[in-house]
Length: 292
Image 1 (spheres, one colour):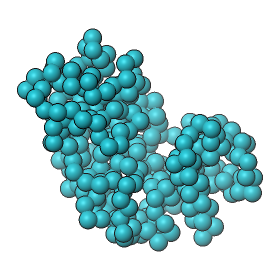
Image 2: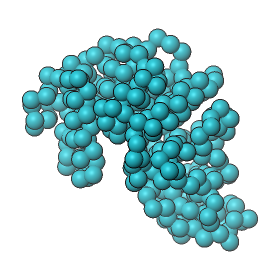
Image 3: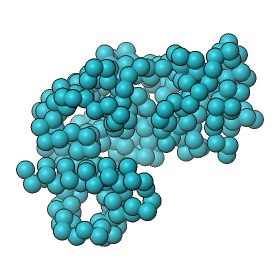
Image 4: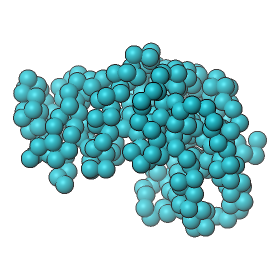
């Protein structure tokens, strides 16, 4: 499949949205893995799936984002148009309104405890929105919100491949605690990728959450991994207290964080320096929290 670039994006706009064909198309500073994203003028974005694996996200977001936006005070992407598969590009694609702000990956807030409260309040409101008929967690969103046991064999293999063996017993205990915990409440909305690159701030306060490609309904534990991937001990405690998080959900959330950090750490040849460093820091936070 052709790799989306500015020329293709501009051609697709001219072909399917001629009213916007006069606007310049330029790449965003940082594009995600699932989609290639481009500015369309100063107020819109074009998002083209990077492979057929992510094509289903387009219609899902178009259908559910307006429903979610009505229940949130924080901004989320607003769909403006749906591009149809064509000879130029065989997958559906989207046009969204551009949301200003800085990601916390690029500009971490000075006070993480304030940000922890903001994010907890967003997640609380998000999980309260009616999830009736929403897409169930599963293969469509890489099981975010589903049963963590799907990744059991992958996690066990990563543990076996770890060069540093000292913490393996602790990691096994954390993983087994996560697997033995079960959510019994009704499914709620799950973003699926609450990470530093998808959270926008202005003056250190959360103003927008983006990239809902892994949206689903199920167990919200996977949306709490930021407790170890970004927060420190103090802000993590504030985050969980504000969420009124029960012990089982926290155990499953730690399991999700452990899984991702382990598979990156155990196979550094398959990643980059930035991701490897992030995985190492996540494991440090998990160890510190588990031993607290």
